[in-house]
Length: 94
Image (cartoon, rainbow, N blue to C red):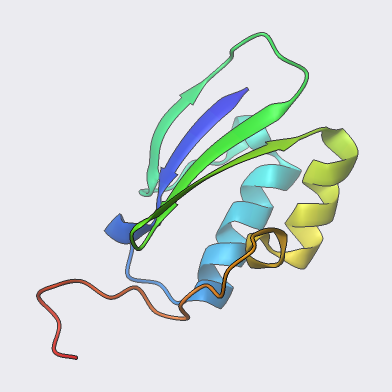
């Protein structure tokens, strides 16, 4: 399965984002949110996530065991950079 997610379209803070993606990872065929730009069956046993957050694009490929692990731990612990707690847009004051 292939999923493209754009975190920049949702204003929830990181903990809510991780819980939301965790629900999807636990039940991929029964959960979809506003940040999901594409979901399709690509015939693969792996779940491929293309995740856009801030100015970064990350591709994560997960087997079933890794999917369950990420569902419980949150996706931010699987990337090699500090994820902002809140989404920041150019319209918001800094």
